[in-house]
Length: 360
Image (cartoon, rainbow, N blue to C red):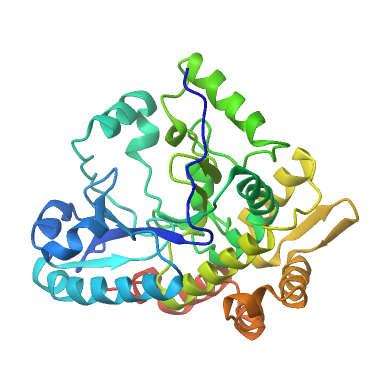
């Protein structure tokens, strides 16, 4: 079996994968509009719009970008092109982590070999799998830097989930879980927060063993929330609920890039798997009101967040990237998205909440 080799990538380049719901403009039910929507897109934008499992969703995929500015330019052009199509075809594109409506009707699975295999293996799980996320790929020139970033990403994954968690509702039910998307996603095998690794070789041995056992065909079959992609020269950070705010997406890109630059020289002490899993559960359940346990004990997740941000500022990370500490502290002081959505649902109803999360 060919050993895993790291394909060099330009450091701190970033790629975005953004999953969006296609909902009927009147009923807010899933609308199988992807084939027609894609057909009518301008040719120059088609490479950036991909199909997903269902025909009632799409994925925006950016090329590897030098920074968040290039991603912002792409999203601006793409959303501008999609607005008239949304009007003509009668749909909204919605940036929420789960389907909020009851969804009485089913939706079609795309005719793709990979998705058909998923449907066969996962049965009812995939027939009730209305979840939508955001992934960031960050480029690294070598496996050592990538390993430090991977381990830091795993440690701080609860914080990044908490900053995006907006999926307390699932098919008309208030679940009480701030990122119910993760509860649904983790019904799949290998969909979990991974452990931290002592070396890239240790990770490679796991992949080779699973391949040899026939459990996976390739690394993409590891649906970890943080994932090495040596074939691309990236670490893929997959924790985020889908979002409707481009501004928040870009701020999260900046924070991820800052942690990646920190990882060029530093790796925080590893946490026991039991601590990692506890922190992950608290973030799913409470988002920014979660707690966090490490070797010093239990503390508020917001304290961990502010400590990280001020550490990055003190080390000059933000200065190197041209960022301001204020944009991150401002984000941390804002209300939890999930709690805010629950309050708005009481005042306005779920329908208006969903419409407010439409990007077109």
